[in-house]
Image (cartoon, rainbow, N blue to C red; front, top):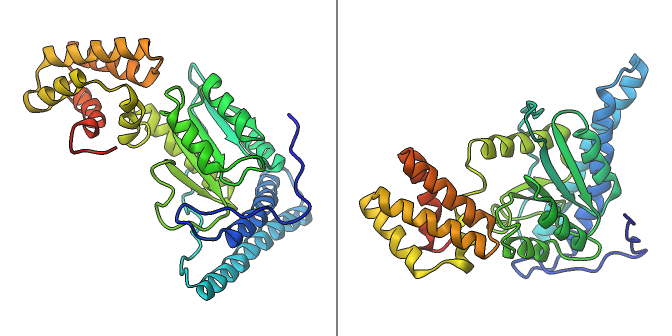
Length: 318
């Protein structure tokens, strides 16, 4: 896939969700992205067979890269204080969990939507070992297509793509029933207020990230998906809302107050049928899960699905 040409001058500024000028955010992002690749590949080099001198060189590259991150963070804090914005850079995650997946019938599928070829290659190299499948896209349009056709388990989306705005790509992913259910991780060197990336995104990976932080993020979502949790509950409600019907609401309300298994089966059948008709896999799958749990019966399983649908009842907003 051809990598779009980078502009010779500074990239155009955009507006953040709060309407703040994004000049500092854009500069921060543009610096952190190549810095991320430097630190990432140096960390990978540390894990190879090196002699003492080579290891010393690799260690110093990592230390110097992290020192540059501290300098950049300090500069941004000073600049933002002068602007009166007062938002400190989000610190890198400290998790050090290993994330090599146990072999299964299907590899864990990761989609990376990122215009930097260095970061795309970094993902591919990091997850070349283990039971993973990595697909990359260099722009928003191809990323949207890959998400719908490839049905990845997890998507990493860069906020500042050369051809499009990451916020809009996220809205497009959430607005498509075929991709709305996929957990979405925001990657950015931009400084964001806590949780300002929600609800469009499910998680945040601050650039420049270290390999252990990336692996920990993937491991966390692997565990959540394996346990059936998926993204936060409102994600299912947000996905099926365009196809929600009054009869579904009536059945769900009755189930919440009575716990009726026959009504649970009826709702499961309706969700499965409408999900097939409307080409909405999450609605179809939720219906099938309800049917399975109701016939088992698995009360805890029913409660888990119902809790994800209750934001659709009157008075709740996903």
